[in-house]
Image (cartoon, rainbow, N blue to C red; front, side, top):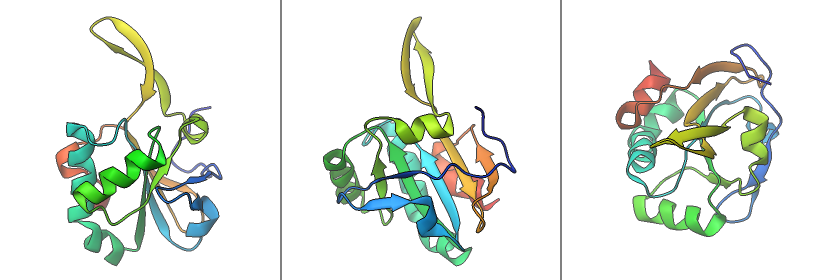
Length: 149
């Protein structure tokens, strides 16, 4: 199933870097930036996370909560958060269940080799749990600006 703008967001739940459960219902009445990224502490993912970090106050002022998701584990997320002082939680989706719900676990290709991985995608979910925007062509350096446009 491919999600589109105007669809209801899947009711995801997962554990953050501290093992605390985070679910869609936690954000009822708030706008949520749910961003899927391939791997902690890699160049593109670091730029993307730091763009969101550097504009976090502005995102909060606009009513957004921010949550990142990758297939990395809790320990990896905690290191990434501490290294770059990220002010938002990261969900460890090691079994790819949330990726599957959002259609972000996809076949990729590099140098002719096919493999499964995360499609870097951001879902902006409104206060009622509806998908307001889907950003699939993420500009890692200026991602916060893409959301705030």
